[in-house]
Image (tube, rainbow, N blue to C red; front, side, top):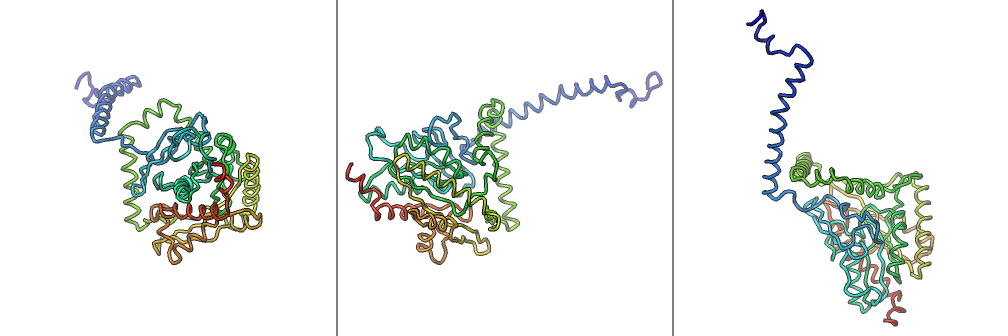
Length: 375
């Protein structure tokens, strides 16, 4: 005790300034300790191989300058690591489209065949060589009608995105045939009246992140990468423990009685797409992909007739029905044609089946005959 004060009174701040001085003394010791711990953790994780190669999506490969017809940086690649059971690497050609770059000048080769679609055409979950456009290229070569096949697609693309990129692709490639793999149903995104599609919003956010040096720095940290991977595995373990893996993939479409405006919009955009193709001197072949439903109780996948089949029948356009091809290939259980239980995209076998169905229509109906005579 001193000057009549207890020890507790002497060590307890009595004025605001005293609290500030105590806080500064704590920070003086604490901040350097935290920084040292962080640097040590970062160093240890880097020695352990972090940050590891791979992304959760292909968005880091976007062409933010929009210098090419495709969505991606020409000559780039992106490894997608999650889920690990279907990890794959996507490579991009000189046009920013998924697939290999051709040898020699494009002008010196036969007219290209342009494939347009969404994540099914992009080939989510399979290698470049297993995507249906590359499988189609192999099949056409084996049938004596070799063509460079270009994969103008991106996961998440709606028909608005396809139209956005189509003009540049038609001008750069001058294809003789365009094959559109249409979805089972008219997409409800973007919502009626919304100015952006989901992929356009994603592109805008990814571009902002790409140009922010601070975000790029933190994204490149080993600590962040390790934390994200641990979180993914913890969520997987939690789902497995709760019996919620494999997950039930829900139908992304609205109830039947709400689909009218979206179907009308899709038909309008589809007609616009065909007009663009024909104005460029090419022909349009539309393939329809089936509606899918997961069956967790039966550990499988069920396919249903797509709405786009009835639309194309009414329009009287040339079509390829992938539903019929899949039902014929696996009449009892189509599950082997998909990446189930990790995803509902087609497996390598499913992709090849799409290519086979399209190749059969192109060859049997002579879509390439006129070109064959000019090679």
